[in-house]
Image (cartoon, rainbow, N blue to C red; front, side):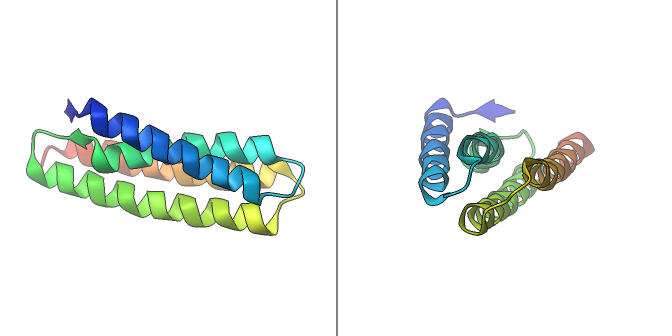
Length: 115
């Protein structure tokens, strides 16, 4: 695995700006939870999309594709939580936690397949 630090720093900055955008859109009580949760979900997905390459080109393309899909899914789900709002923080934690764990499982499985 090879890291491109400049691209990772840019991915962190873009993810931070998007999370701040969710913070400003949310009118509910759990603005901070939404901001931190979206930041935790957006940084790894965008960093693996643009800033990481693996030894095998097939593994790189699969992980970049999965990361881009889950980045888009994270944007959509956090945007829905920002605009619709949520009364129980457990709902947000469960939904985003399950999505992030599925993403982690797929990424780990692809990286260990060595194809």
